[in-house]
Image (cartoon, rainbow over all chains, first blue to last red; front, side, top):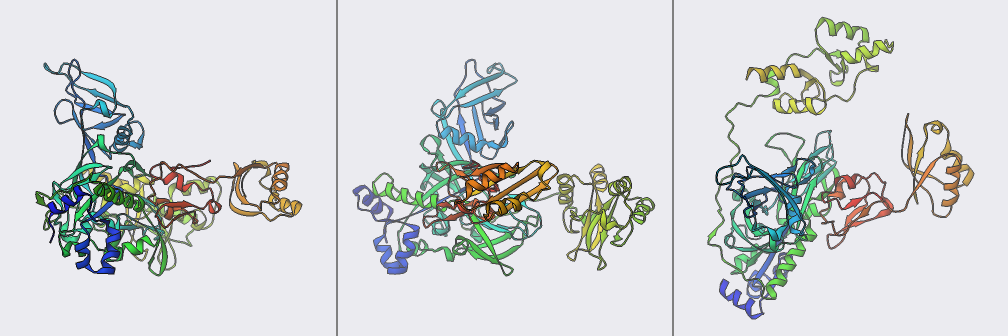
Length: 496
Length: 127
C-alpha cells in the first residue's frame, strides 16, 4: 500500500515512476499486478474528443458608465447574461447569429485561447445604477478578468459507436453516418480513458488535480448524465482558460449538426495498491462498446452489435455479414500526447497529485426526461391510404384522385409493396406533356415514408425537410398501412 | 496523373475520349463522369509518360483541361487526427499510421472533396 503523500514526495525528489495507461497494460501483462503496483507510482490517462457540454464563465470588468448586460454577444455568438452585470457564460455549442454553425461558442473560446481579439457587444434597458444601454468593445483574453472553463459534462468513461440502418445519409453529433450501415463512427480513448482506468472512482472526485486544455484544472464532481452503474461515468471539470493551449483545445463544426469543442483532458491515477494496478491495466479489448443504430429516431436506439475499442480501432467491424469501415471522431493521437505530457510534467516535479475531498458517486441513477404530454404516434393519427397498382393507367389514377378526393396515390407492386407515388402534380405534368400509359412512367420511385410507430414529430420533420405534403405509412414489409398528410398534422396542432 | 475535364454542351455528344485514345495511343481511365444540359465534367487518369500529348490533344478537341497535381491540401497545424475523414472517403486515401496520425495517400484521391466538407476543424482544402 502506498500513500499519496509518499508518491508526492517522490515527485518532489524526482524519483517517481510514471507510466501511461497504455504502458501499464503491457507492464501488468508481463510482470503481474503485484509487481507493477510496487514499481509504478502513477499511471497517466487521457482523452481528446468532442465535448459539447462545455463553456466558460467570463467577467469583463465594469465599463464607464457601467452597464448591466441583458443580452451579450461575442463575435455574434450569444452568451448567457442572467448572472449579474458583467458576468457571462458562453456555451461551446451556441451558434453564431451571422455565420450559423460554421462559427460558435467553441470558436470564440479557441480564439480567446489563441490570443485573438473578440468583439463584445451588449445591450440593456438601463437602470439607475447601470445607466448605460449598449456597448461595443474589442477584448482579448488578457483584458478579461476571469475566464473560467466550467464544463458540465466531459471525459465520458466510454461511449457508444454509431451506425445507420436507414437509406438516407444522417448528419449527427457522431459525424455523418452513411446509409445501409455504410460506416461506423466511435468516440473515446479506450484503454487511455480516465474513468475506465478507475471504474470505482477511488481516486477521482472533487479536488482531483487534472490537466484541462493543456493547463492545470480540477474535477468538480460528477458530470451531468453520470451513469456509473452502466459504465458511462462523466466528469464536471474546471480550468483556467488563460493557462490553456490550442494544442489541446480546438473548435469543431460538425457538418449539418452543430458546433462542438475538442478538448484534451489528462488525469493521473496514483497506484496506491494492487487493485489500482489491475484497474489501470485495462486493455482496449476489455472495454465493450455498443454500436447503436441512429437510423431509429427515438431515445432508445437499438444496439446493432456489441464490440470493443480494439475492434473499433482496427478500422473494420462486421455487421450482418458485411465488413464496415470504422473511424473515430475523437483523436487517439492527441490523447496519447496528453498522457505523455502529463507523465513528463510529473517526472519534472511540475505536477503534484491531489486526493479527492469526496469521490464520484458510484450509484447515481440516470433518468430520462419526464414527459407530461402523451407521445402521439403516427398510428394514432394516420388515415386510410388509397393505393394503386403499378399497372394502373394515368387516366385511372387521375379519376381516382378526383373520386377519392386525395392528392397522393402510393403505387404498389403485385406483391403489395410500395414502389412509388403519384401526386396531382405528376398527373398535371403528364397531361401537359401529352403522356398516356401506365403510372409507372410518371411516378416518383424514391418515396419518403414513416412507420406506424414513429412519433408524429418524425413525420412532421420529414414533411418539412423534404418539402412534401404527405407520407405513406409502411410496415416492416413495405406494405402501405396508412397515409399521413400535413393537413392531419396541422389539425392536431390547432386542437392543442 | 489525374486531369479534370470540362466539356461545353456543344461538344458533349462527340466521342472525344475515344478519339483521344485512338490519336494518342494512350489508355485513358475514366474515374468519374457527369453530363447534363449544362455540359460535362470528367475526372480521368492517364499515365505520366504521354501526359502532355494527351492534354494537348484534348485541348485541340475543345476540352477545358485542369491538371490535378495536388488532390487535397491538409494544413498540418489544424489537423487534430480525429480520423473522421477515414470512413467518409469513398476510396482509401486516409489511414492511420502506427502513431494514430492520419496519413494521406494522394494517388487514391478522386477529388470528390467529401473530406473537405466534413472535416470538423477545416484542416482540408481543395487545391
